[in-house]
Image 1 (tube, one colour):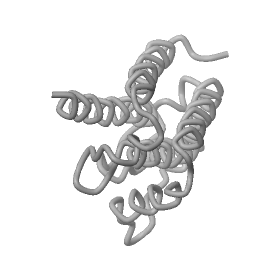
Image 2: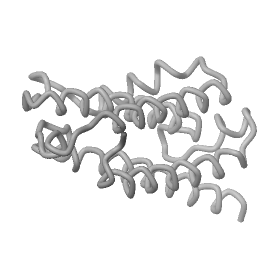
Image 3: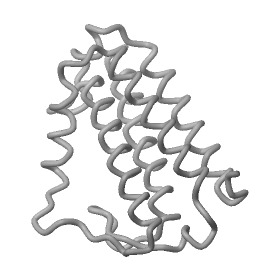
Image 4: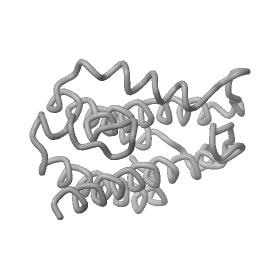
Length: 161
């Protein structure tokens, strides 16, 4: 049974995902690859990035939950990781990319359902935030998706002007 403390975070994750999916619903396959959110990534690329990031941060959270204070490997480069995650998903259709994004959330929520109260205070290293608790890492996941949802929303408003 999920900790009551995590229920507001799950609500935030669900709200963030619903917002993102409403934005993604506005685009067809071809548009998802053509609308560039930034100079390097299309909307479809952002979906791939979010999937890779959520899967990676879920694995990171699982490691934090062991209490072993995991650290990033020497020489870890977050930009390289992100680029690799996007590239891995380039051959997916927009529908496949969205389905994988949904599957990553199912995995995250299943993990959150297994977390105990003491584990929320276990710590580890995040590539951007440094030394953080599992509780903080879970919040970063929601923040990250919200950040990219806003970028997509802003771009869609700009394109439609």
